[in-house]
Image (cartoon, rainbow, N blue to C red; front, side):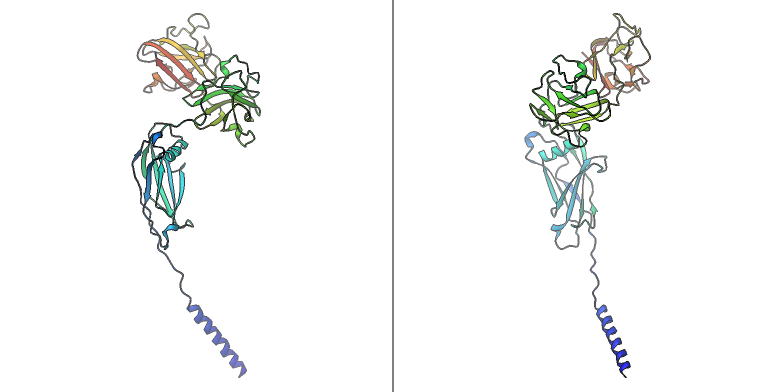
Length: 386
C-alpha cells in the first residue's frame, strides 16, 4: 500500500510540472523595419568663406519603422564619399534618434578638403544613411543621394615661404648652412601652398628645412621626431626656436619630399620618377640647332637647373609642328627624356614625360618663342608661348 501511494505521488508531481511548462508564454516576435529614404535640402553647394557659419545643406531621412516603442533609440550612420568610390573611403557620422543632420558651410568644406578635394573645383559626392536598433540589429541601407560640391579656399595652416631649402646630415649638403645657394638644395613650388623636392638622403639621419638659406633663426621642423613613422611623414610647424629635426628613412636613397603648407603636413616617399639628371640638353628640328646634337660648341642647347627637380629653357625659338628630345648628355643618343605617345591631344603644350620612352616630344603647332620646363617631382613638362 505504501509503495502504491509513493507511485501516485510521483505521477502527481510530474503532472504538475507538465502543467507548469505548458503555461509558459511564447517569446515575442517583431517585424523588421524598412529602408529609410534619404533626401537632401539642395542638389549642389558652392559656398564662399563668407558663408562659413551658415547652414549649407541638410540631409533628412524617413523613419525606418522599427517595432520598438521609442524611435529616439534608433541609430543612424550617415556616410559621405566621392562618387565612384562605393563608400570605400567614406566619412561617417553617428546620429541617435534624430532623422536629419545639417552642415554649416565650414563643416562641409573641412570634410571636402580632408577628402583631398581642391579649392574651387566641382566634385560629385555620394551620401547614404544606414539605420539600425541601438544594438546594431536590423541594419537598413537607404538610397544614395548625389550632391555636387565645390570647396572654397581657406587660409593655409602655415604661411607658405617664398623659398625652401634642405640642410642637415641626412642631405648631401651637411649642416654648414652657407648663405650661398646650391640650386640642388632648393624645393620647387608646385602651387600656392605646396613645395616638393627630390633629394638623396642618408639612412637614419636628420635634417631641417629652411625658408632662408644661411639663417638658423627660422625653420620648419616637427613637434616630436620620436613619433612612430615620422620619417615617412606627419605634421610640421614653423619655429623660431624649439621643434625637432626631421628624421630620414632607415634606407638611404633618392626621396621625394612634399611640404603641404595648406594643412601643415609633409610626406617622404622613395623617388620613382624619371631618372634624375645632372644636366639636360634640347635637340630636334623644332629647335634652332635641329638634330645635330654636338657634344659642345655654340649650337648646344642646355637647360638651366632651377632647383632640386626642375629644369627650364627660359626662352627658345620653336618652329611649329616639329619635334624635339631632351638628353642628359650632349652629343650622346644613349639615353633620352621623351613621351610615351606623341599623338595625345594637347600634349604639345605639356603632359607626362619619362626616361627612354617611345616618342619624341611633339612641338607646338604655332612657331614662336617658348619657355620649356621639365619637373621631375611631378614627371610633367610644359611649353609656354611667350
